[in-house]
Amino acid sequence: MFQVVRFGKPYYNLKQNLIIETDETVAEAVVEGKLSTLAMPFPEIELCLTLLIYPNGNKNDGGTGYVSLYAKIDNSSLVSDPKDVYAEIKFFVYNRVQDKYYTYQETEAKRFHLFKPEWGVPLFRPASLFKTPAAGYIFDGEQCVFGIDVFVAQTFKEWEVFSFEENIKDPIFTWKLAKFSTLFSDSYTSDSFSSGGSNWALKVYPNGDGYGKGNSLSLYLLSESNENAYVRAKLRVLDQIQSNHVEKLVEGWPNVTADNNGWGFEKFVPFADLKNASRGLVVDDALKVEVEIIAFSKTDSTLSD
Image 1 (cartoon, rainbow, N blue to C red):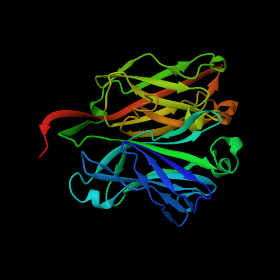
Image 2 (cartoon, rainbow, N blue to C red):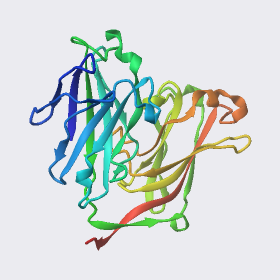
Image 3 (cartoon, one colour):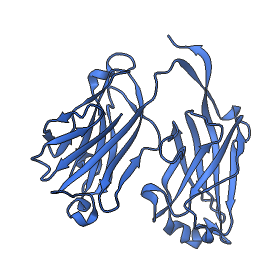
Image 4 (spheres, rainbow, N blue to C red):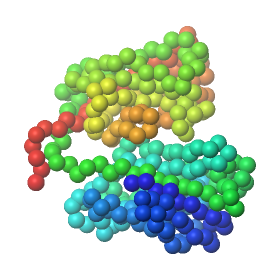
């Protein structure tokens, strides 16, 4: 499903136009500083989803000073099967100056259910960027355009059986990036390696990706076997002096829509830590990254009822 919502300012007295296949319009809706579009149905699985926008930030989720965006599935849609829904979410806002959309892509499919019908990003964009047309986000009489792209995973037809750590052969792969200070391309991908009977690769953005661009190194695990599996793994940037590695756990479905970045983090390690010689992350102008595959799902032929 794809929605684009156009808002005028002031935020609290406006009409909202929803651009979708049927060109429907939605009514004004403002509740406690929150804007919401009309819930739109997913006909195939009878779900209704609403895009929620907090112009001044969702204070209850640490979003003060930012525009916060959320996707919410109506609870009535989660009473009958499937009671759990997995969906990949992408939020975006149009920038007139750059003539392109700024996007935020969740790194894994999110699970919606009765007790957690809402997922989103509290720190989408600083609210200050929407105060002046020079930033590009407000234009044509102080309007702005937000959107959401949602991919809902199909209901499981088969049981998923996980391979756990003791069943995975060659779970650890280490990759050394020499002459790290001279790496100026946006991203670098390692050679393919085999683990647990599948082929994988690591992908590094030396200058950052997404929210990490310009401030952090980004690190991802990719599937070279086109696995659309649920993965649990540990990503590391190695401390080459004291073994005080930077380690983060990834767990979930792959991020298949945003640059095919699989599983990982936009902000894996800040530049300040990389430049700090005492941290031992870059030694002799070399960076070492590592992944440990702990578990990933495989599907057998047993059909569910």
